[in-house]
Image 1 (tube, rainbow, N blue to C red):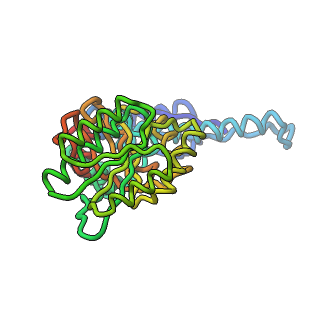
Image 2 (tube, rainbow, N blue to C red; image 1 turned 180 degrees about the horizontal axis):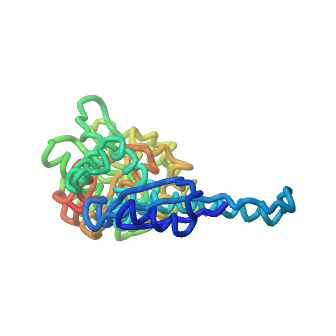
Image 3 (cartoon, rainbow, N blue to C red; image 1 turned 180 degrees about the vertical axis):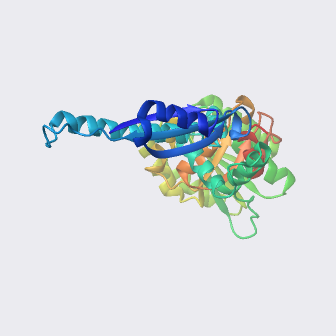
Length: 347
């Protein structure tokens, strides 16, 4: 069997090529009409035909040699390759797929989103309609949570993550918003005794905001501090940055949080983090800690936001806050799925 693809500007032209090569005995396996250009809407028309013709054995032998069998297997592989290539070239959402990947959306996640969109829209949909539908799918995909109402009892929240993602500044922003705007009783506890500058920074914020701060050095001291501040509406625990590769430091962090038993543990990641690193961070922290929420910081320091979707889907927990700068308390927002979808798709 011989297999070949014929391309022409019309069906008649493609069939003429087929007959000139294979004659009248050829069998058409697949035909496709398409146009070059985004979404298959623009450019010159094109017709593709994949056809095959049997190559009969000579009368001298009826057996099939191993070489003939290998040749047949190769022909079959070529058929599959031609069909796969044709489907990819004429896939109407190819340009959107490339845009998502260029925005650092993981290819698997990009394919997942476009597969969902393909169930909603016909391939002939205008580009603007496809982009609007895709934004809606991204927004529906990302689960967010509202701010705490703090109506009942004391809520204890710990922020964890690698170094340099802005945990301390984020805690100060949250504390300032709940103290100065929501008029709630807030206290701060820090376990970050490794960086003197970080402790001093948080002390400065605490004094400006007007909230108590305690530095704890052991899990037992953390338990005592929590009991001391149990009259507060919100207790925020700052932790030292930890590498996902350092099992000893992660075990130490786990010992502190086992003592604290926080209501929520928020993993803090920077939007500037590469997706592969973000996945490793999530896996490393999730292996030892009960992560409940995700916070993405430093949205102002990047121009591609696919990492947010990648991290969210990998962790599988709601997005709580995003931060957009260094100013306290202004540069923090409750996560909004529609805004995130706009960022990811360049809105």
